View (tube, rainbow, N blue to C red):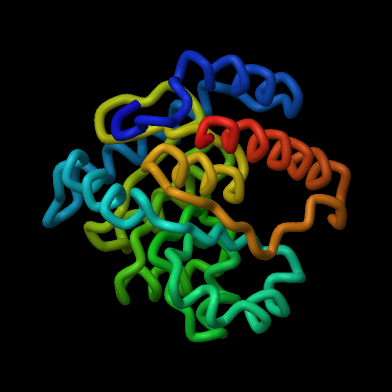
Length: 226
């Protein structure tokens, strides 16, 4: 992994990834297929920028800064109202669907981390206004990767849960929320705050299991930032 002075090495992440595959019954080959498709789309993009330059830009946004990661729990709306002044002085990273809530509050996140489950029109809109988008390609979103990635501008990096290659990176992480934290740590955030996270309330056992993993992974990656 590049640009990850404090981040998790892939050899360490892979052990966790294998546990996730077993726990959910995911197929690694499908994650790898999605990553290959993302790589091919990136390779064809007009005004394509070098991955090293894009990572330098991310580092410039994050390194040494206080970061606020916004999750998409129902509490986000109220927490944004209570923390307007706090947010103005910090870098905001949005986890996927939280982007729509932020936009309703007239907040443009500096970075969006998404596996394309959120409101796509809002993610594209924010990208065109200046948000840097980190798109995660996995086995269940291949069609969305094909549809959305060509619509984003040159300020985009693609990530994978499996082994990184070419311009496709792996900074660590499983859900949108914990991938935000892995990204912030990898690029040297000075301090990380969280808004809009609720690891208890959810609508299904599958979602509950994902939230348990997200909580565990956030706790794990924050140890790397100490």
